[in-house]
Length: 397
Image 1 (cartoon, helix red, strand yellow):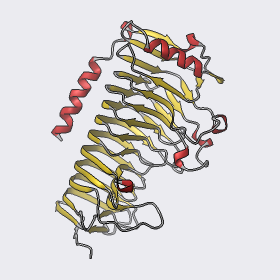
Image 2 (cartoon, one colour; image 1 turned 90 degrees about the vertical axis):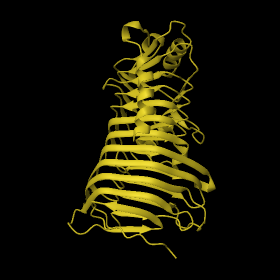
Image 3 (tube, one colour; image 1 turned 120 degrees about the vertical axis):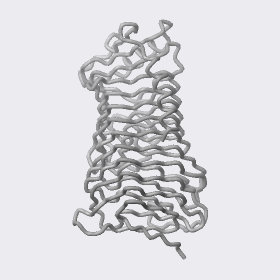
Image 4 (cartoon, rainbow, N blue to C red; image 1 turned 30 degrees about the horizontal axis):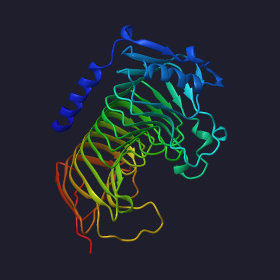
């Protein structure tokens, strides 16, 4: 735990010390660049012009301001590097995407709002800002890969995202890729339970990331941690509905993935499809290690604890010998109820690359029907202390 806290605190001190007080900032209001905010006019060019002016400013601390109103914005990239640092993007109104029918050709659209190579960036809503993806017009359209992420940050170091409401994304609400020193706090992420692939936050190839004190109600993972990610601290997340918090999937198509130094604490899962999940593909390579889940509450979660080295969402999957190594995983202080008709705890590890150093300490999860918890454990080295699971792991033939 200390290794995560050290790097996160170090990064946050750096971040907060580089966000100037409002009185020292030069403000670029999007309305001064042609945006209207009536929910009808296309305000994309006004946003682009305001960003260009702020990013190229020599005045130091600058702010792009989105005031109260409804701003219709098409696909846009906020490109860096910027001369001005730090730079803030304040959202006090609603930014809404056009419906899918207005996007034109969509087979290669990866994101709707994209910040790229912008260091020392703060995107702040002060509890008022809303980012609305108009996802209802997308969810029945084609595969997930043909839908854009609502808000993506790539190669943005020293990033703060705070105080926003994210609604009805086309796909992921927020993606963090190749970023260092990230703080995400006080978000509300909302999409219907049946909306497909509407993850709350996806993290990939990033390090020193803190996510805390947020509410996530989605149709997929509340948070997903993907390959190349390390030193992540997640706390104070209320998840549900949704698919819980996932590490992975890792090792798809035989790829090499690494995830380590992950701490998830003081979170709650209410009527989620899963709780805490680690999922890796057969045939993958790499590792997921030094992972700690602590002080977690489950309220009628379907599958509270899962480690699955046989992840495959397809109807048929070939059995492969190699696997992403899963080790040094600790569960401590996990309590609550499960509605699972299968296993309350399911640890399914590879015969050739078994899971090692898995610890259950003070884990007490009971079915809502008051029966005994159902457990499944194969090919894993698990120790249990003060728990009600009675895990008996065995090796598969």
